Length: 157
Image 1 (cartoon, rainbow, N blue to C red):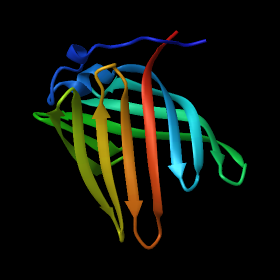
Image 2: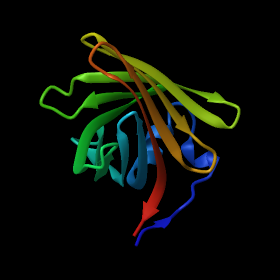
Image 3: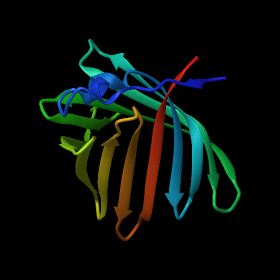
């Protein structure tokens, strides 16, 4: 069984350093409206000469219909001066989003958009003082219309 390991606000670094604090394993809980929910694990690991941080998630997705699926997804993250970029984990490492992170009271918050054909992803990355973080994607367009909110908390074996 995995236990929760809290991280203090100082451990996030600042807008340009929060990405460095993500290495390791996380418990994830995702709610997709409409659509379903997912519970699982995510891990950030160093990749390709420490230039990239590879994100890989896996878990059980339960659709609103009750159907259950095993789900996986991977991305590549790269540090920027005031935030980070998120890339698809494919041969080209195509850009998904460039996230500019700022401090808002006790939070570090990043925002970014991505246009996928006619569908638009508007995202918010929120790093909390208690060591948790969340990612919200509001997806709107002719082919997609949903909100996905994923909460992460540090896990250790």
